[in-house]
Length: 310
Ligand code: NAD
Image (tube, rainbow, N blue to C red; front, side, top):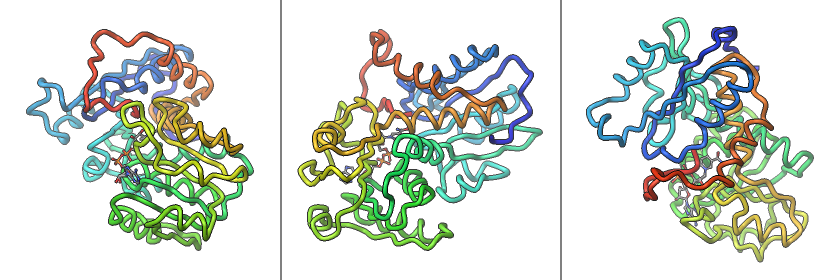
């Protein structure tokens, strides 16, 4: 359990999410419903830097204001996960390793930075792919989420990680960063030609950490005809839950891990940091899934900038 004893006993909790284009985020609902189920009242505000009212607000000013207003903490997302780090007093080992913060806790006049994306993917992996072979994994996509996923994969026992990205510099930067921060003796390779690599050196599992497969970006970054039944396949895209990659993987007889687990468990961990109280993952997952059965709110105008993944 993360240490955050400060708010247990309080019956109200004030938190929020700082980011851009965050109006479709499912995270506020998960926190509010979980708090309610535990007899707390949670106000979770969207602090969207794209809003006209925020036009003149800087990140340092916003953090100072939220702290003064009694916020227990904030989630932080695109594009502030790195920028916020310089404004904090302490960083957790995960935040330092991934070099990104998605959860800030205010306590006793100090600011603590955590990365619950990494734990979120790791916990989802441990539960959903328990016992999977982890000698060699291929991860496609070395962007913001890929960093957290790569660290989680190494923590979950992957000893050889191959990384592919359409931008090879991103894959190279992440590989370098992983080797610098990981204490285990691991091998990290950059892959330029996926079919060639799979033919020569079949990985035990594949992780999609690119946006390919999202409703607005159909397709798959990994050719599904390369899959064989003994491989496992994880996707971090969760809108839709069943991506083209996961559909192909199921058809090929592979074990699969959908992206909702990472999204739910990052919130589970953040809830614990904010409130000091353990969260019920099944309850948070039920709130998360309710979005798929509800009509789209009338004010949820489609926009290129809306990110469903937060
Ligand atoms: P990002 O833009 O920071 O990174 C995406 C990376 O993928 C980039 O480096 C890009 O070059 C690479 N890429 C794109 N298409 C590719 C392809 N066809 N082949 C190889 N590489 C390709 O985005 P991000 O913040 O890392 O998010 C990626 C996706 O992860 C999001 O679109 C979202 O669906 C998902 N996500 C899920 C969760 C979760 O909790 N499940 C959390 C964050 C993001």
